[in-house]
Image (cartoon, rainbow, N blue to C red):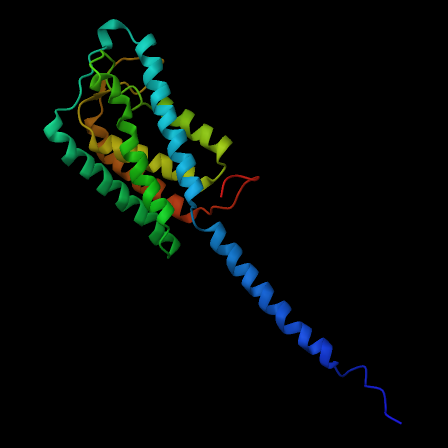
Length: 224
């Protein structure tokens, strides 16, 4: 007669089932962590579309709400455009890589998103490009960035994207020279913000670092 197995001894079937479960649990945790700490293509695309749409919306509103006297915006001379864009892209790329450095891994999403938003801010020069009178830099305003970040918080719902957007905006302001309407489209009173350029650089770096510390974890459902 064969004795029954002792209860304290694991059966062969039971011992085999533990290994795959542990491996699956480990692999699932790692995969989830990767998803939460990287910015996906869909998120980058959505954020860029939302930002560009808001720039164009503020530009359109300004054409109807700005006083005639303030519609003196002119398009940048063409020979200066390549260098200007190169500076904007380089600064944005540096900030995106700064956010990645905080995460200790390359986040291509942030490395692409920040320079893209830095450049897209200049879409508010389009009326001048087509020969239309317009106010100067209508989307270079604090009201614009507050509305845009609020919209991203509603649509995209990812904190690092909102912080990266703030970083890109202040990075752009730090490169531009001349006058701005910081409260457009409510007011088109122009101010020379040159003395705040250092503050804008500090803000851009601070928001980039904060974006790197933040995770891509959805606050509700969000965009992946």
